[in-house]
Amino acid sequence: MMTEYRKPEVSQSEIDAAFSDAYRALWNDDVQRKIDADIERNRKADGEFQLPASAAGREIKVEQLSHDFVFGAHIFNFDQLGSDERNRRYKELYGTLFNSATIAFYWKQLELEEGHPRFRAEYRDSADFWNNCPEPNRQPHWRRPATDPVVEFCRSKGIRLHGHTLVWGNNRWQIPDWLISRIPFDYLKNANLERNPGDNTLISEATAAAFRDMSAGEMEKALPEYTALINTLTAKRIVEIAMRYGDKIDSWDVVNESAADFGKGNMVPGSKLCKSWYGPMPGDYTYRGFKIAEGVFPPEAKLNINDYNLNEDYLNQVRDLRRRGCKIDIMGAQMHLFDPQICRDIADGKSLRQSPEEVRRTMELIGRAGLPIHLSEITITAPGGDRRGEIIQAGIARNLYRLWFSLAPMMGITWWNVVDGCGAPGEPAVSGLFTRDMEPKLSYFALDGLINREWRTGLVCRADKSAVAGFRGFRGRYRLSWTAADGGTESFNCHLS
Image (cartoon, rainbow, N blue to C red):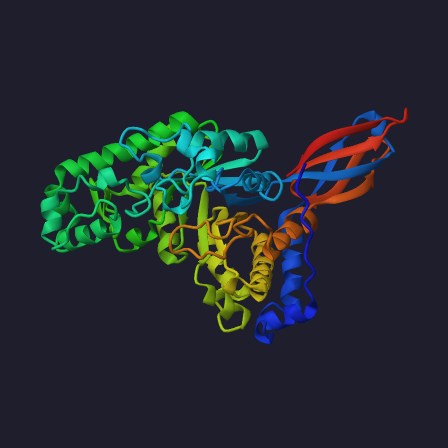
């Protein structure tokens, strides 16, 4: 049985109190009409379908079964929410609200022990473990479930699978402790910082201090063993994951958050080590990551680049990589409103960061690369966690989703933390669509109303005497059904693309 959630009533006076006149002026009726017109133009299509002869002249019921557009969320809290009922409600969202799931492939937690990637589930990945875990967010694999069960679950739901991420320089979240520890301790001592195996951020700072005055080439000579190791193991990891999941996962963030290194000139073709702002990385690691991935993943797998730096550096980096022969299918774009005050300021009309004009300008800029855009990581907070905060979160989410959905280059939108209190340390506790107890917030109803109602085509048309039926609708899979002459119901499945 699917859970049915009753939408709470929200009065117009509550909405008026939550949003300022300045905010409403930015999202005025003319803006909303343009959004509607762009959705009609960019997200719908006309189609004609030849049906069996029994449909000739019959009334045809048109039901949309799925969207081509990606409405996703990460699935990092698989079986981790502390009770079977919470886990059931969480899983239920995938295949109903979300048609895509972003699966965690962060190197640090996937391979907690060197040479033993956590593909298969162990007891520490079971619901029983998490249901009896008093402080789940203190576990090293919190938000990082074993990948095999998640992949199998998503495939059983028939939804799109997206892997995140193969290459990322971040020492706190991606590079394993056991690999970072191979940086010679003598160099770190020169920076007057002691090693703390539990804090890669400290080691990153120590590394930056120790090698501040070195070029990338000098750093490579100083660290020959580490240079060979990080190059070899990065390539091995990509190959290993491709061998296991290449024919199972639809798309991958091959490289994450690398535009800053490109903009600083840290990507040197032919080099063996990159003096990344994160710390030492394989030389020209973005280019090399894509070329390795292209060689081992099947051609139908989409290879994405992903970043929060939605600026000229990112655009130029993608253009440069494609000129050099990299297969890049999709550009990922992040938008994290981590600070709740930002959402308050948006509602008060004090911040133009997410105004219609600014969003269009940003997407037009990165759209110059000529690639589809995936809004790959979306965070919108409910400031204060109270009723007004929920109204603000839902209102901002509804307007932004409508605007994003209307833009021609957009191919998908992925919400980040689905459940309150389940983000990474430093991420807001009130950015979910559900409370920590898996009760829906107003933002859930806002997105459900768009995805499953406003943007889902359902209509009746009539087939002509040749049994051809035509209609206009949102791109996706459809079932066409009719009553045949013998009184029975017949149907025909089709794809409006």
